[in-house]
Length: 256
Image (cartoon, rainbow, N blue to C red; front, side):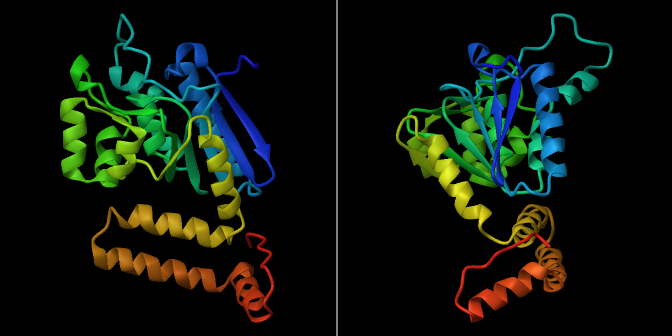
């Protein structure tokens, strides 16, 4: 197994971003954080990729972050900025799926929350233990969690440091699918394969409309939706979609 902290494997139009420090439970340190950021930049520059899957090697997803250094640097904000990786995942412009093949805790859960969809093995545990340790989730945990599960459930999970089973995480909307043990990645691949067959420009616009729209008043979100729909009218993919429907054949989208 490669010693690189993050592996990138591309299979057709699907790319796998694999956290590769199972012996350290894929704890996020500076090296792993930089590797994730660089990988996300690379993925955004490859127009042939249509779906990204984030997972971990063996049976490990990520159980948190490296603790604060013994001697904090003069500017702690700089260190925190280096460690913040969820924003890079959230900025990947194609659909992203977290295949949670083991525990996703603390910073590890923040990485999963930055993905568009989450698939977990039934034996995986999910939650934030930060407050029970006198810490605070600062890589999107408070903001993305509340947007996904709602304010009340987010407060419950954060203030109690309660850890959920995959089944309970599914019930509160924290994840989208639960699979039998060891099957999260296979399920994610099947899901990614289905998504990759859709029109890529329309997928990106859909992702943009939902994520940006949540931060807008309804009238502005509706205008964004209409603007993106107008932009889509001028694409080759839209014409291909209409033509394939009329001729009763499978569409072949080029992302143009």
